[in-house]
Length: 112
Figure (cartoon, rainbow, N blue to C red):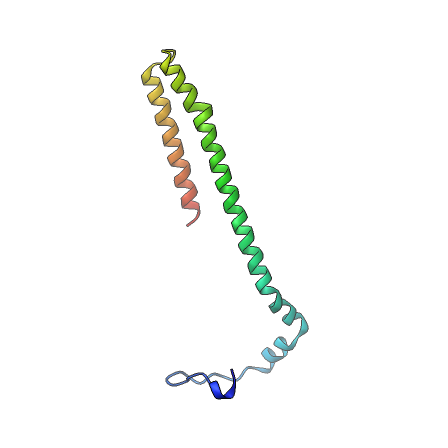
């Protein structure tokens, strides 16, 4: 800020002068390089977080496809042709739905 645009200080305690140790640390070239890298590190962190979210979404879609085409469709076909009783089909569907809800609950609880 320029001297013409000073921060309003009404009602605020007076800001203490920086200590010589802090000034010498801030003048250090290593500290200046580290401060200059902060935006790049924040960007890299955001990209890594986005990649993790994409991986999780892709994994969930793969598991959903496996459940649909690997379990639900064969059970439905077997029940349709009378090779599997409707009670057994209902039990399998309930077990699949319960396992899915448990997975989703544990996944969402780990985010908190």
